[in-house]
Amino acid sequence: MPFIRLTQIEKRRVFTLLACLFLAIAAWLFMALNNKYIYTAKTVLVFKNTPTRRAFYPLQSDTVDLQVEGTGWQLIFSRLRISPPSISVSLSQLNTKDFITFSDQLYNVNRQLESTQKVISVKPDTLYFDFTKRTVKKVSIKLVSKLDFINQYGISSDIILNPQYVKVAGPAEELSKITIWPTDTLKLSKIQGSTTVRIGLQHSPQKNVSIYPSSVEVKLPVDEFTEKTIEVPLKIINNKNYNSIKLYPKKIKVTFLVALGNYSQVNDNFITATVDVNEWQDLAHKQFTVKITEFPDYCKLININPSKVDFVVEK
Image (cartoon, rainbow, N blue to C red; front, side):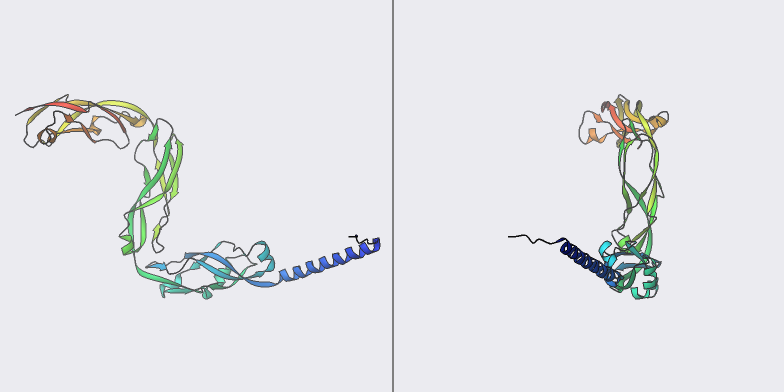
């Protein structure tokens, strides 16, 4: 197939025609993209000014469709992403009725968006809510943690939460199921010193239940641990017949890990070791098993020697 050969003048005419066509298309696109169009954009609702004496539960999703007026440029480059990605909606109308309408709040909605975006309507325009009597309950905060310590280090005393309680507000039937409120999981690794951190509380799974505050301060007392052994006298329990019982030995050795800061403080007054007479009377055992019934929470038990003791009953 023969190639079409163009003269130099014909080539310039073709290039001029293509350039004019390109400029015409560009001018048309520029004019078209400058025009205003109406697009749909999804956004998340954030409620504010919630009723103080009414517990509410939204009867629809917290995501709505915004009918936004914008240019074609916005459609191409940003797909009309709403900035910010959520909008605040006042629930003050719920003090007198069981629904809110966006048509009454379009001015405030537009104030939250970029100046080049204009919301002309919201779908759905009306949000409905289910109401019950609102009550407030105070429950303990439970720390959820995954702590990793450097060798020989650990928690040396009680972990302090500030505050220790959270106020939960919502329907009475929902609050009756709540006894504690967990934190988010506190994850720390290679701990070798006391530390204070702030962690959030877990979000309520029920939309009509709210909590205050939303975070808690956690103080972790951390110290190096060392081994300590002390002698602890044995106590006899369940001696219902008041028999004269002699133990051999009368004391046992308890070995445990204790924080260096508490080393001198922990003595036999902090530990209670017992033997149960029922082992002999009911089970006919020939030795008593030693049980530790009281032990400091901030110490770690290693060994009891002996774990069983001989006895003689004198009637």
